[in-house]
Every structure is written in C-alpha cells, then in structure tokens.
Image (tube, rainbow, N blue to C red; front, side, top):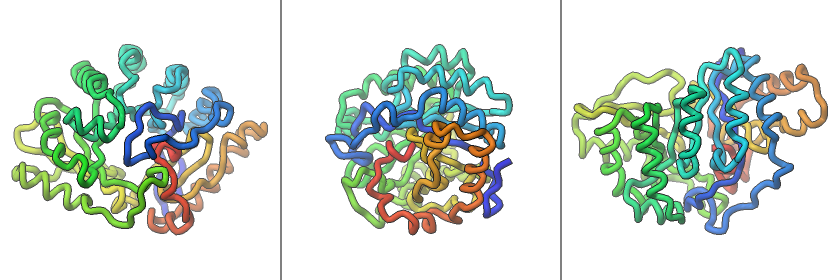
Length: 327
C-alpha cells in the first residue's frame, strides 16, 4: 500500500503513453503545436508495462491510460493486454478524444476495458471545430454514440471556456438526459503550452453549477466517493448524471489518491507541481526493482499537501501543455 506523508492512500495511476495529439485544442497548445518528444525519449511498451506491474505490486489498483491522445500509439493495445494480466488491478480505463478509437472498440470489449472518458468540449459542430482546430466532429460524435450504445461506461469531459463554448453547456446535457452517461464540466486550467496566462477564471465550479441549475432547478447533489474529483448531481428524469470538477479551484486536494507518470517517465505527484524523478532513466540504467520501488516510495513520502503548495515549487508549470503533463 502506498501512503503519502499526509496519510492519503495512493491507489490510482494516470499513465501517459504519448505526448502527441492529432487535435490542436486552443486551450491546450498553440496552433503550431509544441515540441513533441522524439520516439526514443518515450517509454517503450515494455517499460510502461514494467512500471504498471511494479506499481500494482505496491498498491495501485486503478490505472487510467492518458496522453496526448493514447490511440496515436499504434502499439497501445499491446500495453493494455499486458496491464490486464496484473493480478490486483481492479480497473483499467482510458481517456481519449475519440477520433481514433473506432477500430479498437471490439477488442476493448473483449479485454473487459469498459471505462472510457471522452474529451468533448462542445456539442455544436462549429464550436467543436473552432476549439479543436480540426474537422473531426462527426468521427468523435459517432464513436461516442457507439461506445454508449455498446455498453461502455462513458464519461464526457467538457472544459468550460469563457467566450467559446458556454452556450454548449445546456445542449450537451441532452446526452445524459437520453443516455446513462456522465457529462462532467471542468474548470479551465492554465496548462496550455504558454499560449495564455491567467490567475483567475470566470467559470469556476460555482458559476458552472449556477448556470446549470437555472436551466434545471430539479438538479440534486448525489453521493460521491471520498476520492472523487467531481461534485456529482442528478437531474430529475434524466438517465445519466452531471459532474463538475474544480480543477483550477482544487477543492479536492485533501483526498487526492493520484500519481501521474508522463510518457517520458517523469513522476508527477501533483498536477500543479514539478516532476520528482524520472523512471525511464531509472529503468534504462539497469536499476533493480527494489531501487525503482524505493524511489517511488520516496517521492510519495514527500508530496505537497495541496495543489497551491505544489505550484510554489514549480514556477514554470503554466508554460506546459496538458499533453506533456499526462492528462
């Protein structure tokens, strides 16, 4: 079991497999993209599999595969099959933009990987394509509906962007009205590759809730797990539910159970903090499993109490893109 220095049980790993993405969302990176890692800088499937295996042995029982866009990696399914073989892993899930997942849906079902988060920041096609700077709306929407109708546990992640997609907040709730899905609204975060600077946001979790509750007065708070990052709600008569994630306000730090590892092997104990160690270099240096586990234990034992505290350690954090941090 992994217990940090604030007595929080760390059982959830967000494992990035690439920093590349086939979209160019304007809140994530500049239109020209960022300086993506070279292939030999990325961890191999074998290295990713080994890290997953060791962390499951240490108490991680939930792994979410992130990117960039995970399905940019042609060998992703090999990693998923390897990870599924770890006894003690209770949940293996994926966060994706749903542009490339289509050919893999059947195999995901065969592997029993049914939890999929789809990043979709608009339900209107024109709004979606302005934000993503790509014309993939139809592919994303069709893959989303296929995932839903084929029985996947789908959560839609919608980042609320002032003057861009606020008008889509109420329309996208039609999806959770008609289908048993969760539509989750996230506060905007400052990880945009240095394309924008901000210290406050207009659309925080309170403003998002006020906007939704005005359209749906019957919305009611529902119980959530202690470690949930989202505040969850149910609207009377709707099949799904609504979540709001205070990702900028950071109200959930006290129960944080997460560890992030980037595609380059950097271990990040808080999204707002700097990398603590690099496991890629450790593994390639022929270090023993004992030394790798010990290094992980050391960084877990020295975590910041909150994202605000972690931010003080990392003056350049806001120049990063979310694709390089690992989702």
